[in-house]
Each structure stands twice: as C-alpha cells, then as structure tokens.
Amino acid sequence: MEPNQDMRLQALLDREALFDLVRRERFARDQRRFDVMRACFHRDAYVRTSWYEGRGGDAYVEATRQWMGNTGNSKHWVFPAFARVKGNRATVESPAMIFNRARLHGVEVDFHVFCRFFSRAVREESDWKLLSFEVLFERDVMKPVNPAEQLPVDWQLLATMRPSYKFLTYIQSQRGVTVNPDLLGDDRPDRLDAFHGEEEQWLADGRKC
Image (cartoon, rainbow, N blue to C red):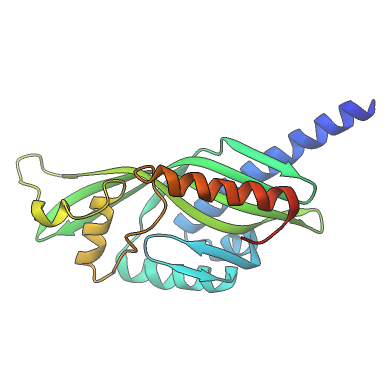
C-alpha cells in the first residue's frame, strides 16, 4: 500500500475509533454500565456539565452513579460529527440531545436540551481515551406531558437565566442544584470562540490551557 493510502486509512480508523468512543461512553452512562463508562475516560480527565465539574475519570463515573440514583435517569442522543487528530492527540465535537421526564410542582414534564459535546482525547497503548468532556449549550425546551396542563414555571425567574440552557437551569434549581451561569453556550459566541482557540492550541502542541 502506498504511504499516502496508509495515512488515509489510519485517519479513517482513528476517526471511527473516536466516534465509537464518544457513542460508547454516553450509551454506557445511560444504561448504567459504569464499568464500560469508566474505561472510556483517561485517569486525569476534566469534566464539566450542568451539575458536575472536576478532574479524574473515576471520580466523574462515581459521581454519575450517585447522581443517577438520586435524580432519575436522563438519556442522551449523540451524533459524533467532527474529529481532528494530530499524532496521539485528538478533539471530537458531537451534536447531541439530552432528554428527561420529571415532575415539577406536581406536573409531569418533558424537557430537552440541544447541545454539543466536546472532548479532548489521547491515545494510550493504542486505545483512545477521553481527556475532557464539555457541554456546549444551544437551546432547550420544556412542555407538560399532558397538553391540557399548564407548564408550572415562574416566567419572571426563567427570564433571568441563560437562554441557551434556561429550562435546564430552572429544573436543576428545583432539585437543589445550583447551575454555573457561565457555562459555554451559543448565546456567548466570543467565549465559545476563545474556547475553540484553546482547543486548537492544545491539539497543535499539547499545551494545557
């Protein structure tokens, strides 16, 4: 096989391995396969979501196990779309949706969060591991399961929340969880551009930002 063909084949194999890693991690999380989920993360992984921020893959998996025991089981659809690889480093960005059914002030509601998942990944002993996991928020929606019921929301309070994840923030607050108002989202494009710039720099030279 020609050298150029070797490189193209390796690029395809790396992309598919990274896409499989991203899908496998969320599927394992949703199905409570915490052993599989743990194997997807690097030991020093940094994770930031609406309810968690910390370093260490094992710590995040254990926190997830406890979180799911207390708040029910949200689900995720994830569609890996854009991977970039440089040697043993890579970044992956994936359109995604988080969906959940909950009870809010006695009314059963569905809420959906449209977002993207972004991860750094590193190759260790021929396997890719997630070195980070970030949520880039786009927008969210909420509706009562029974359309005859009113959505029990304090609209004035909701108006004070970030538009890219306002319903998520609202329902988390009802669960006693304070959501960071400065998470990454499409409603703050300057911060998102800066974030992507840092990820480009890490991919280029491995420098931690």
